[in-house]
Image 1 (cartoon, helix red, strand yellow):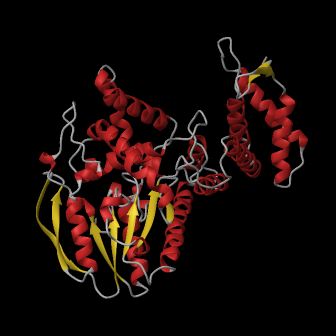
Image 2 (cartoon, rainbow, N blue to C red):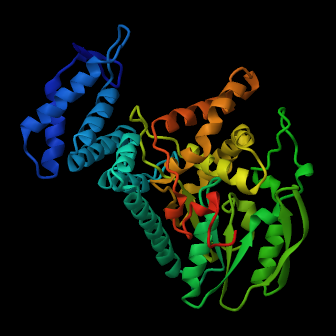
Image 3 (cartoon, rainbow, N blue to C red):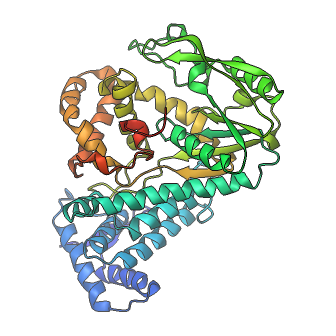
Length: 443
């Protein structure tokens, strides 16, 4: 029997099931329900789950109880009540941290966007990996795919409308965000929308401005760090931007990722009269990238995989793990790297993201959520078979603890997910095609 519970401040107090009943009932009332008996049944489920756990002489925490309440509400099909409960809990978490509700905070987290993502996930019954499994089992995976694609396209439309309102003054649109967030596809879709209005969009692919790989320093593992803005020829980028705005023609270099060298010319471009430069880059918001360009001439768009999916333990999965999956697949298919190389390199990715990219999120004009609710089952089908071997290879290497933890965490996540094999149902213009291939777009 559960007799005590640990509060957030560490105090141990008597466990009271009635408080769980009351919290559930309050959530139900918020969406028009008043059935106390149903609240009691769910509370009984919560207690039963708690009693199955071994606390080794300790007690469950308030946070753990709330996680289980969410799980039980979702599993019993009380979607609206679950949503109200999650919102209530979410709002109070922000208040305890001294943050404004559903707004930005000093830790660069876009809470309003997270709320939108969480609300959508609850409405579409894909909050947890368990729910994803049930969707696949019921044969509704195609419906989820369609809903997820619509969600992303609506994100693009909202961004487009904000850009449209400032078209008369814009010279540069910056699409920025961490690795594998979907910047290139987002750029292509915006180009199509803006062309309809008569604007000529000139994409400046910053990947072509990397310095040759042999000019980069190696770390102690022999790995190149080309994730920093200093890996890019920023002086040349800035020179080309000013030249384009000034009406001159530039020659964009060509960077070969398979050889790690810049060679030849990718294209010659001139900015037409109604032209706007589009920059698709990890580091588009890095000040040195557009130094000397007036602020009112620039529009910043930030893109991130703002997943609100919960794992088997009802903990939110990490956005970086979603993106690492994307990059593992892309690097394997298009850049001649095996998935283990990507995992080993990811510490460079994260360090650079946290220092140069994530810190800029509150400076942009709009944020786009590129997470697709169906993508992880697709990634499991492609990647899960590699992970046991990688985990075994990494586990005894003290210099690879970070890579080992990432591989292990991904393996555990995949363990609770369904695998999806039929990629033919994924639209040819889907953002996911940027990583798995088969896109109608030319990357």
